[in-house]
Image 1: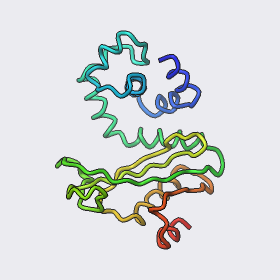
Image 2 (image 1 turned 90 degrees about the vertical axis):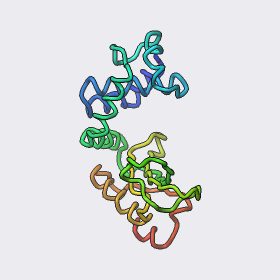
Image 3 (image 1 turned 120 degrees about the vertical axis):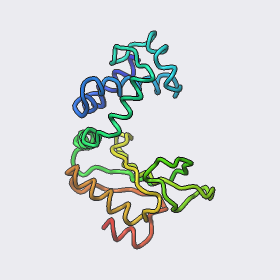
Length: 191
């Protein structure tokens, strides 16, 4: 946990989380992140007992009710999420190099508003959610992500991502994509 605390400080992640969310929510987010990394991804019901032996930013017990309320509150706090993304973008400097990735995830859930019939790589006939992620090539850290309906075409995903980049105020970012985006229509949209 000492190494994770150092990384959080050195990378500015702690400061960005704490400036984007309330102190209580920010320390809970950092504590859960450190637990997942430090425990190899254990499930959250084990967090409370793990917390007894490991120092975390949030000092009170993180019970199922505590993290359940946190996820509900943070999930509805789009201002906090976008503030965090903007804080991360501000650390990139001028003309950053960003990797853009899009993937679809199948879901059985009937409660995901973004789940729609769309391109499904798995071919399992389920509704899909499209996840878009921007990564800093230099720091190898995620910058921002968004969920979109699974039936949104790639060109519209690109338009939405470029609009998000404009909100961050990034000047002339260089965007790197995988082979799935190298169609003439997609490249013209990026241009």
